[in-house]
Image 1: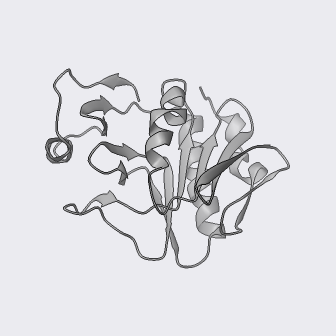
Image 2: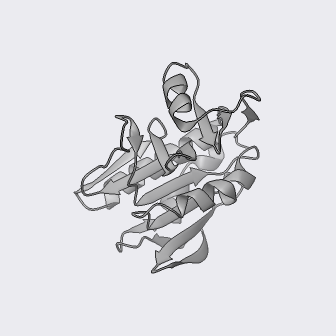
Amino acid sequence: MAEAAGTRQMTAAEYLAWERQQEERYEFHLGEVFLMSGGSARHAFLAARCVTELSNRLPQDCKVMTSDLRVAASPGSHYVYADAVAVCGEIEIAEGTNDVLANPCVVVEVLSPSTEKFDRGEKWEAYQRLEHLRDYLLVSQRAQRVEHYRRAGDTWRYQALTGGDEVQLADGTRLPVDALYRGAFDLPGA
């Protein structure tokens, strides 16, 4: 998240109508609108690798999407763009919209200096309210490191993984950390 788009407060409905008319992407957090900044080459590459690896490894009924689809992290208060999301089973679109995902089971955020605090804080708090979310991955650009939060009943289990490790998603799917990072450090990053 880079900067507030202005000091004007908006309702969620105003934001959704306004943001659909914009060329840039904006996130909505408790009435404030924030312009999403572009990422580094490494950020874009890691996001693409996550989409590819999830697409290749998740069960057939799962659909993996890029950061182009808005997510209702907490309907009415938080609308965000994740770097990658997966839905297993039927896709649910938020009520009253045709372009806001309501039921991701996996969310991936590639960390950037400008977004890391938010991805770990307020955004993560909002994601935890998603009923279907089972896995939240924070992917570092600075080191070969994936932080994995996996839902376990009413709590979340945390695990930090590095090269040679595998992320085991809640459904049993395994993502080798090495596969996510293959070629990433050949590119400029944060």
